[in-house]
Each structure stands twice: as C-alpha cells, then as structure tokens.
Image 1 (tube, rainbow, N blue to C red):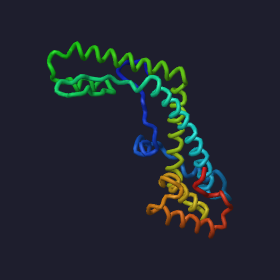
Image 2 (image 1 turned 90 degrees about the vertical axis):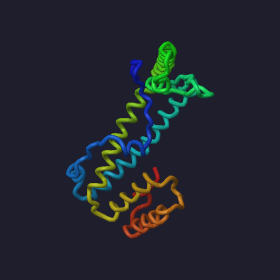
Image 3 (image 1 turned 135 degrees about the vertical axis):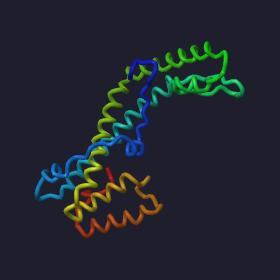
Image 4 (image 1 turned 180 degrees about the vertical axis):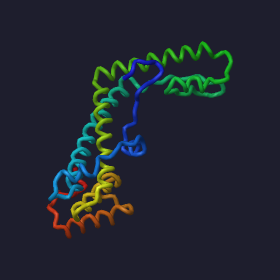
Length: 214
C-alpha cells in the first residue's frame, strides 16, 4: 500500500471486472504448438489454464479473507460529511468526494480540512493493518496471476483445436467461466453441458480429462 494521503489501493478483484480491463498480450500460438507435435496444443493449454484457475480461487479466497479482517477491525477508509440540507451525513470514500459534497458551500474550508485529516488518518490505519497481515503481497500475487490467466484464456481462443478433445476443452472453459453454478438450468447452460457430454462420448475421452470441475 502506498503512504500517500491522496491515493489508496482498494481493488475490486473479480473476473468480470478483469475481463473488461487492461489488455494482456496472449501467448503466441507457435509457442503453444511447440509443446508437442503429437498432442493437441489446446489440451496442453487447457490443463495449465485449469490448474491456474483453481489456484486463483484459493489465492483470491486468501485475499478476501484478509480484506474481511480489515473491514471488520478497521473499516473501509471513509468519513461522514455533514452536508447542509441533508438529514443524514453522507459517506465519502475518497478525498475528492469530500470536496464534491461541499462544493460551492461558503464557510466550509475549515470543515473540509478537518475531514481530509480524518480521512487520511483512517486510511493510514488501514494501510498499517494491511501491511501487518500481509495483504499487499497477496494482492500482488493475485494480480500477476490474473494477468497470466487472461493471457492463457486469450491464447486458447486463438489456437485452433486439433481434436474433439481440444474442442471439448474450449467448451469446458466457456462453462467454467460463464455458468453461475455447475447445475444452472438457465439457457444456454444445459444445452452446452449436453454438447460437452456429446464431445466427451464421441471422442472417447477419459473421465476428468476435459471437465468443468477444478
């Protein structure tokens, strides 16, 4: 965590947010094919992706548990801003929000300065506690893992499958990433699960070779 009073690092780590975020260059298709001339490169990538996907779940759980401790003991950095004309104070979670809430209100300079000091002190308590429980290294590890996860995902979509097993692997990834639950009954998940079962049967794939389980 940074020590500056003007910034804070409170990321929202979610796959939906990440997929809409920064672009990560995919692994080259040629690199994927060099993994083995006799195997489907998509299968090799899928096994690596599935292992990383499972690890990410565990690492993100660790991150969320640590942040949960901070939320319970320190609370998210914020201040309550008494805004004229409002019955209740308004919560500000960033310094800029304090100024926005009191914008164009005369005689609030001293109030603003006090609220900024209060916010900075609260955020500093968060940062000290976060460092004490090791939140920073976990957060960094998760972010780096997400970069790798996104690169692997993009590569799988670009590399042509060389077998029914490779096609099934791509479909298993779609199911793993998309359906809220493994038994979700909303369209299109049941038909896609049926299609995956057909591919596994037609390809005579061993149990667990291509699946949505982790």
